[in-house]
Image 1 (cartoon, rainbow over the protein chains, first blue to last red):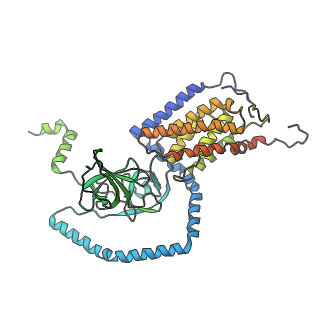
Image 2 (image 1 turned 135 degrees about the vertical axis):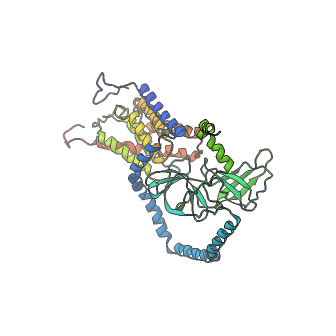
Length: 305
Length: 174
């Protein structure tokens, strides 16, 4: 690449040819892509860089925050008052249930003890603010302002006041990344509240979800509420997730096409609750024995007479 | 220094390295602003990188592009290497075409830049669709068109320090 330059390049120090450099850097990038996608080996580098970039990121989000604050300011008192009234009404409407919940939980505990069942894990959580939505247009993620220093771990469930929002997928020291339910790769085990039918709900982008792998004649109706089934040991059972809005029972597909919309404000910003990790239940005895065999190997068997 | 063009024979001062670094950092900072999914937000880093690759191919090329790409990957929470690959290819193309591009007046330069920026976006799209990402919609490509529309003002803005004479002297011919 010769350019009629102000300072002509020295004759013997031109470096490698552009094509060679292109090959080098392109293969380096493709190597990074593969390392990150397949082997997930670069999380430490990403974590370090993300923490170093945090101050800049905070400053950069000031203008956007300011604009939304300004809009809120001019939205003004009337809106605030209406919201306040609505909240008070809701609180009153729910008071009956809330007041009795303590007693119901106690009763549930006793009944479970009577039936000799494991007690349900109480839901404890940590409040976090959604700082901003990740700029990546290919996925649906948000960043929250609590990280591994505040005890957030990968895999924790994230909810808001209406239902499940998503799951923590990456933790940095001071922030964490939450993959929303609507992300294309995010799946959540659910059951239909009405009849207990279990299924898998997967994201479909743009505040849409799809109920997968159900036969065309399944008993699902428009308006059904889907709650977490708790089979995955990640989400507590019974959290509301989505509502069925459209069903296409076309027999030309092998499965029914069931579209849902999330109940929680999945793509709105605000505060969320990061639920503590569920304690995974122990495997049933025969499965536990199976999983022990390869670990112990032949040695263990030989010691037995 | 500016290469000869048919429209401007103006002799420019040599560019300062710190100014290039400053503009690239500013562009990176602009990219950090979380606009969410608002369409038509240009990729500032890609735009400024293309500018310097076209105007100073000896000073800014694929190495800089790679570093900026990795930084963007971290900032965007996307897959490492996605922006890096796109920017490296962009820098290669811009550097290779720089002598041709600079021959044209600014509006036609912008027309040359458009396929470069769109190409970089297509590379990113391919990298993510292969790994199972979600199609972001055609509105996402709007960012490149906005960026190209900014080529005209950006050229004046970024060349401004090179227009300034070192000492003001009214008897000087240029």
